[in-house]
Length: 225
Image: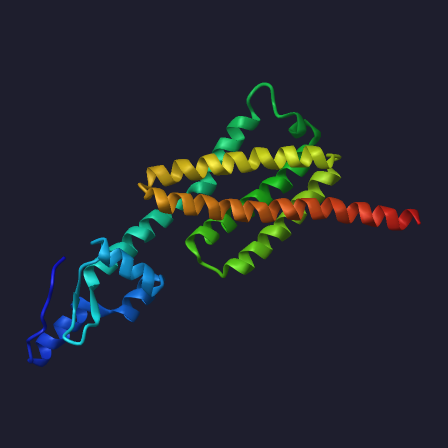
């Protein structure tokens, strides 16, 4: 691992050195990781580092920026998951024989579901890219699921059929995510984490769908009384 000793005293030389090397806190903020993670990366040789006479680590700014840039490119590719999934779903829905549950949905309802689907894909991209607080995105996913559930129930689908429709969508999303991650050259560990994140979001959608059916049943029971 390279070492570096700052011996220059000229102000311009000191300024150049400060631009080249970052403190632990500065590097962590740029990378959005905790200190233990960055130390582990440095120990593994992923980031060049040296120790000051006082024993504090300094991290190569160029290496940190390269990690940030590489992550940004991968996230841009991952953002394509929605487009890949949409194309996959369309192909599968038009295969023969068609999905049994799909036949129960008329064209007007299909268009509503497509609109909801596009919104959900945008949530997936935001969730993976960490553009918003995860708590907020999970709440939006559950709300989207509730809207899905309401539309599927209005189409005459049973809860079982709605679950079948959702698992079809979820499987396509999972396959598309893996395809996009592979194309982006995402490291295995990071790819697994992204897929897990997408499934967490999908779980919230599923809960929203189930809640829509339960709410409709409770409302029906109340009217019956």
